[in-house]
Length: 306
Image (cartoon, one colour):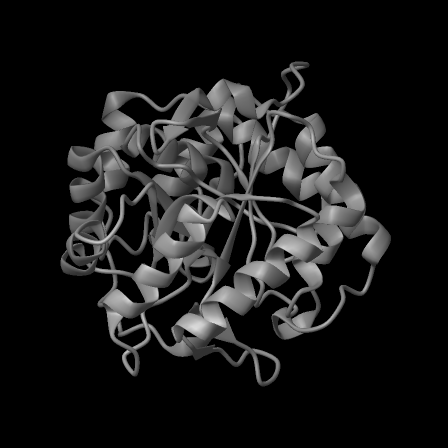
Protein backbone atom coordinates (compact mmCIF):
# COMPACT_ATOMS: atom_id res chain seq x y z
CA UNK A 1 0.00 0.00 0.00
CA UNK A 2 1.39 3.41 -0.96
CA UNK A 3 -0.05 6.90 -1.09
CA UNK A 4 -0.34 6.47 -4.91
CA UNK A 5 -2.33 3.24 -4.84
CA UNK A 6 -5.88 3.55 -6.24
CA UNK A 7 -7.22 1.04 -3.70
CA UNK A 8 -9.89 2.54 -1.46
CA UNK A 9 -8.89 2.10 2.19
CA UNK A 10 -10.96 -0.38 4.14
CA UNK A 11 -10.66 -1.44 7.78
CA UNK A 12 -11.34 -5.04 6.73
CA UNK A 13 -7.72 -5.20 5.53
CA UNK A 14 -6.68 -5.31 9.21
CA UNK A 15 -8.36 -8.69 9.57
CA UNK A 16 -10.86 -9.80 12.24
CA UNK A 17 -10.81 -10.00 16.01
CA UNK A 18 -13.44 -11.63 18.21
CA UNK A 19 -14.41 -9.96 21.49
CA UNK A 20 -15.29 -12.24 24.38
CA UNK A 21 -15.78 -15.15 22.01
CA UNK A 22 -18.99 -13.50 20.78
CA UNK A 23 -18.53 -10.40 18.63
CA UNK A 24 -16.25 -10.32 15.59
CA UNK A 25 -15.16 -6.92 14.26
CA UNK A 26 -12.52 -5.57 11.92
CA UNK A 27 -9.26 -5.07 13.82
CA UNK A 28 -9.02 -1.35 13.14
CA UNK A 29 -11.64 0.71 14.92
CA UNK A 30 -12.45 4.35 15.53
CA UNK A 31 -12.04 6.26 18.79
CA UNK A 32 -14.78 8.87 19.15
CA UNK A 33 -13.21 11.12 21.78
CA UNK A 34 -11.92 13.78 19.35
CA UNK A 35 -15.30 14.55 17.81
CA UNK A 36 -16.08 16.71 20.87
CA UNK A 37 -15.00 20.26 21.70
CA UNK A 38 -11.62 21.52 22.97
CA UNK A 39 -10.58 19.82 26.20
CA UNK A 40 -13.00 16.99 25.30
CA UNK A 41 -15.67 19.35 26.54
CA UNK A 42 -18.87 20.49 24.88
CA UNK A 43 -19.85 20.14 21.23
CA UNK A 44 -17.34 20.21 18.38
CA UNK A 45 -16.76 23.43 16.45
CA UNK A 46 -18.15 21.71 13.34
CA UNK A 47 -20.87 19.23 14.34
CA UNK A 48 -21.72 18.43 10.72
CA UNK A 49 -18.12 17.40 10.10
CA UNK A 50 -18.24 15.13 13.15
CA UNK A 51 -21.31 13.42 11.70
CA UNK A 52 -19.54 13.05 8.34
CA UNK A 53 -16.52 11.49 10.06
CA UNK A 54 -18.68 8.91 11.82
CA UNK A 55 -20.58 7.99 8.67
CA UNK A 56 -17.37 7.83 6.67
CA UNK A 57 -15.84 5.48 9.26
CA UNK A 58 -18.63 2.98 8.67
CA UNK A 59 -18.34 3.42 4.89
CA UNK A 60 -14.63 2.60 5.20
CA UNK A 61 -15.37 -0.71 6.88
CA UNK A 62 -14.98 0.28 10.53
CA UNK A 63 -17.14 -2.07 12.61
CA UNK A 64 -15.93 -1.03 16.09
CA UNK A 65 -16.46 2.45 17.55
CA UNK A 66 -15.21 3.30 21.05
CA UNK A 67 -16.65 6.16 23.09
CA UNK A 68 -17.49 7.08 26.71
CA UNK A 69 -20.17 8.97 28.58
CA UNK A 70 -17.44 11.36 29.76
CA UNK A 71 -16.52 12.51 26.24
CA UNK A 72 -18.22 15.88 26.09
CA UNK A 73 -19.64 14.75 28.51
CA UNK A 74 -22.36 12.89 26.57
CA UNK A 75 -21.58 14.72 23.31
CA UNK A 76 -19.76 11.85 21.62
CA UNK A 77 -22.54 9.36 22.34
CA UNK A 78 -25.21 11.80 21.15
CA UNK A 79 -23.35 12.38 17.88
CA UNK A 80 -22.90 8.65 17.28
CA UNK A 81 -26.64 8.09 17.59
CA UNK A 82 -27.40 11.13 15.41
CA UNK A 83 -25.05 9.98 12.69
CA UNK A 84 -25.51 6.22 12.67
CA UNK A 85 -28.79 5.13 14.30
CA UNK A 86 -30.35 2.78 13.27
CA UNK A 87 -27.01 1.01 13.36
CA UNK A 88 -25.69 -1.43 10.76
CA UNK A 89 -25.98 -4.97 12.17
CA UNK A 90 -22.21 -5.53 12.04
CA UNK A 91 -21.37 -2.36 14.01
CA UNK A 92 -20.23 -2.75 17.64
CA UNK A 93 -20.35 0.37 19.81
CA UNK A 94 -18.29 0.21 22.98
CA UNK A 95 -18.63 2.82 25.67
CA UNK A 96 -17.24 3.44 29.14
CA UNK A 97 -18.34 4.67 32.54
CA UNK A 98 -16.55 5.59 35.74
CA UNK A 99 -15.27 9.11 35.13
CA UNK A 100 -16.98 12.43 35.79
CA UNK A 101 -16.19 15.78 34.18
CA UNK A 102 -16.12 18.98 36.24
CA UNK A 103 -14.67 20.95 33.32
CA UNK A 104 -12.46 20.92 30.20
CA UNK A 105 -9.47 18.56 30.46
CA UNK A 106 -10.58 17.51 33.97
CA UNK A 107 -11.35 13.88 34.77
CA UNK A 108 -12.44 12.52 38.15
CA UNK A 109 -12.92 8.84 38.93
CA UNK A 110 -16.22 7.57 40.29
CA UNK A 111 -16.59 3.82 40.60
CA UNK A 112 -19.55 3.91 42.96
CA UNK A 113 -22.07 1.22 41.93
CA UNK A 114 -24.90 3.77 41.88
CA UNK A 115 -22.94 6.03 39.55
CA UNK A 116 -21.97 3.18 37.22
CA UNK A 117 -25.59 2.08 36.91
CA UNK A 118 -26.73 5.63 36.16
CA UNK A 119 -23.89 6.06 33.66
CA UNK A 120 -24.73 2.83 31.86
CA UNK A 121 -28.43 3.64 31.69
CA UNK A 122 -27.62 7.13 30.41
CA UNK A 123 -25.42 5.66 27.68
CA UNK A 124 -28.21 3.28 26.68
CA UNK A 125 -30.60 6.23 26.25
CA UNK A 126 -28.16 8.43 24.35
CA UNK A 127 -26.98 5.65 22.05
CA UNK A 128 -30.58 4.42 21.57
CA UNK A 129 -29.62 0.88 22.46
CA UNK A 130 -31.35 -1.83 24.47
CA UNK A 131 -28.00 -3.41 25.28
CA UNK A 132 -24.42 -2.14 25.11
CA UNK A 133 -22.20 -4.69 23.36
CA UNK A 134 -19.05 -3.75 25.28
CA UNK A 135 -19.16 -1.66 28.46
CA UNK A 136 -15.82 -0.72 30.02
CA UNK A 137 -14.91 0.48 33.50
CA UNK A 138 -13.05 3.66 32.53
CA UNK A 139 -10.63 3.44 35.46
CA UNK A 140 -10.55 1.83 38.90
CA UNK A 141 -11.57 4.25 41.64
CA UNK A 142 -9.18 4.07 44.63
CA UNK A 143 -11.95 5.41 46.87
CA UNK A 144 -14.30 2.52 46.04
CA UNK A 145 -13.68 -1.21 46.58
CA UNK A 146 -12.72 -2.52 43.13
CA UNK A 147 -14.92 -5.58 43.47
CA UNK A 148 -17.95 -3.38 44.22
CA UNK A 149 -17.58 -1.62 40.87
CA UNK A 150 -17.15 -4.92 39.04
CA UNK A 151 -20.06 -6.59 40.79
CA UNK A 152 -22.33 -3.77 39.62
CA UNK A 153 -21.19 -4.24 36.03
CA UNK A 154 -21.83 -7.97 36.40
CA UNK A 155 -25.37 -7.21 37.63
CA UNK A 156 -25.97 -4.95 34.64
CA UNK A 157 -24.80 -7.78 32.41
CA UNK A 158 -27.12 -10.27 34.11
CA UNK A 159 -29.99 -7.83 33.57
CA UNK A 160 -29.26 -7.70 29.83
CA UNK A 161 -28.05 -4.11 29.73
CA UNK A 162 -24.44 -5.11 28.95
CA UNK A 163 -23.29 -7.92 26.69
CA UNK A 164 -19.54 -7.90 27.41
CA UNK A 165 -17.45 -6.20 30.12
CA UNK A 166 -14.11 -4.50 29.56
CA UNK A 167 -11.55 -2.64 31.63
CA UNK A 168 -9.43 0.46 31.08
CA UNK A 169 -6.30 1.85 32.71
CA UNK A 170 -5.51 -1.30 34.65
CA UNK A 171 -2.58 -3.50 35.67
CA UNK A 172 -2.27 -7.26 35.26
CA UNK A 173 -3.11 -7.65 38.94
CA UNK A 174 -6.31 -5.64 38.47
CA UNK A 175 -7.28 -7.72 35.44
CA UNK A 176 -6.89 -10.92 37.46
CA UNK A 177 -8.95 -9.48 40.32
CA UNK A 178 -11.67 -8.52 37.84
CA UNK A 179 -11.68 -11.99 36.29
CA UNK A 180 -12.42 -13.45 39.70
CA UNK A 181 -15.73 -11.54 39.57
CA UNK A 182 -16.72 -11.58 35.90
CA UNK A 183 -15.34 -12.55 32.47
CA UNK A 184 -13.33 -9.74 30.86
CA UNK A 185 -13.51 -9.27 27.08
CA UNK A 186 -11.13 -6.35 26.59
CA UNK A 187 -8.54 -4.09 28.20
CA UNK A 188 -7.94 -0.52 27.09
CA UNK A 189 -4.63 1.02 28.22
CA UNK A 190 -2.37 3.74 26.90
CA UNK A 191 0.01 2.07 24.44
CA UNK A 192 1.92 3.14 21.35
CA UNK A 193 5.32 2.75 19.75
CA UNK A 194 6.79 5.38 22.09
CA UNK A 195 5.04 4.23 25.28
CA UNK A 196 5.13 0.49 25.90
CA UNK A 197 4.70 0.51 29.66
CA UNK A 198 1.74 -1.82 29.19
CA UNK A 199 3.78 -4.53 27.46
CA UNK A 200 3.15 -6.83 30.42
CA UNK A 201 -0.60 -6.20 30.20
CA UNK A 202 -0.51 -6.88 26.47
CA UNK A 203 1.31 -10.18 27.03
CA UNK A 204 -1.26 -11.21 29.63
CA UNK A 205 -4.10 -10.34 27.24
CA UNK A 206 -2.47 -12.42 24.50
CA UNK A 207 -2.27 -15.44 26.78
CA UNK A 208 -5.82 -14.96 28.08
CA UNK A 209 -7.44 -14.25 24.71
CA UNK A 210 -8.47 -10.74 25.77
CA UNK A 211 -8.65 -7.94 23.19
CA UNK A 212 -6.15 -5.16 23.89
CA UNK A 213 -7.36 -1.70 22.81
CA UNK A 214 -4.54 0.88 22.89
CA UNK A 215 -5.60 4.44 23.61
CA UNK A 216 -3.37 7.26 22.36
CA UNK A 217 -2.22 4.82 19.64
CA UNK A 218 -0.38 7.48 17.66
CA UNK A 219 1.56 9.01 20.57
CA UNK A 220 1.68 12.25 18.58
CA UNK A 221 3.87 14.30 20.91
CA UNK A 222 6.64 11.72 20.83
CA UNK A 223 6.31 11.01 17.11
CA UNK A 224 6.70 14.65 16.18
CA UNK A 225 10.39 14.36 17.01
CA UNK A 226 10.70 11.29 14.79
CA UNK A 227 9.64 12.89 11.52
CA UNK A 228 13.11 13.31 9.97
CA UNK A 229 13.71 11.12 6.94
CA UNK A 230 16.93 9.73 8.43
CA UNK A 231 15.20 8.51 11.60
CA UNK A 232 13.73 4.97 11.58
CA UNK A 233 10.09 6.08 11.52
CA UNK A 234 10.66 8.69 8.85
CA UNK A 235 12.82 6.40 6.73
CA UNK A 236 10.39 3.48 6.87
CA UNK A 237 7.45 5.77 6.12
CA UNK A 238 9.28 7.13 3.07
CA UNK A 239 10.09 3.65 1.82
CA UNK A 240 6.39 2.72 1.90
CA UNK A 241 5.27 6.16 0.60
CA UNK A 242 3.02 6.61 3.64
CA UNK A 243 2.90 8.86 6.70
CA UNK A 244 4.57 8.26 10.05
CA UNK A 245 1.12 7.91 11.61
CA UNK A 246 0.27 5.13 9.19
CA UNK A 247 3.51 3.31 10.04
CA UNK A 248 2.72 3.55 13.74
CA UNK A 249 -0.77 2.09 13.25
CA UNK A 250 0.69 -0.65 11.05
CA UNK A 251 3.22 -1.43 13.79
CA UNK A 252 0.41 -1.86 16.31
CA UNK A 253 -1.53 -4.16 13.99
CA UNK A 254 1.57 -6.30 13.42
CA UNK A 255 2.65 -6.20 17.08
CA UNK A 256 -0.07 -8.62 18.26
CA UNK A 257 -3.21 -10.23 16.90
CA UNK A 258 -5.11 -9.17 20.03
CA UNK A 259 -4.44 -5.46 19.45
CA UNK A 260 -7.45 -3.46 18.25
CA UNK A 261 -6.23 0.10 17.48
CA UNK A 262 -8.82 2.88 17.67
CA UNK A 263 -7.17 6.00 16.20
CA UNK A 264 -9.50 8.97 16.50
CA UNK A 265 -9.87 12.17 14.54
CA UNK A 266 -12.31 14.96 13.74
CA UNK A 267 -11.27 15.07 10.06
CA UNK A 268 -12.50 12.89 7.19
CA UNK A 269 -9.14 13.16 5.42
CA UNK A 270 -7.27 12.08 8.55
CA UNK A 271 -9.75 9.24 9.06
CA UNK A 272 -9.12 7.94 5.54
CA UNK A 273 -5.36 8.07 6.15
CA UNK A 274 -5.72 6.15 9.42
CA UNK A 275 -7.84 3.43 7.81
CA UNK A 276 -5.37 3.18 4.93
CA UNK A 277 -2.77 2.05 7.49
CA UNK A 278 -4.54 -1.33 7.50
CA UNK A 279 -3.04 -1.86 4.03
CA UNK A 280 0.56 -1.13 5.13
CA UNK A 281 2.61 -4.30 5.64
CA UNK A 282 5.90 -3.90 7.51
CA UNK A 283 8.71 -6.38 6.99
CA UNK A 284 10.11 -8.42 9.89
CA UNK A 285 13.28 -6.29 9.77
CA UNK A 286 11.23 -3.09 9.95
CA UNK A 287 9.23 -4.45 12.86
CA UNK A 288 12.42 -5.36 14.68
CA UNK A 289 13.93 -1.92 14.10
CA UNK A 290 10.81 -0.09 15.22
CA UNK A 291 10.42 -2.27 18.30
CA UNK A 292 13.94 -1.33 19.38
CA UNK A 293 13.34 2.42 19.28
CA UNK A 294 14.36 4.18 22.47
CA UNK A 295 11.45 4.89 24.78
CA UNK A 296 11.32 7.90 27.11
CA UNK A 297 11.03 7.44 30.85
CA UNK A 298 7.30 7.28 31.43
CA UNK A 299 5.77 9.41 34.16
CA UNK A 300 2.70 8.26 36.03
CA UNK A 301 -0.50 8.97 34.11
CA UNK A 302 -2.31 12.06 35.31
CA UNK A 303 -6.08 12.08 35.50
CA UNK A 304 -6.41 14.30 32.41
CA UNK A 305 -4.81 11.58 30.26
CA UNK A 306 -7.69 9.17 30.71
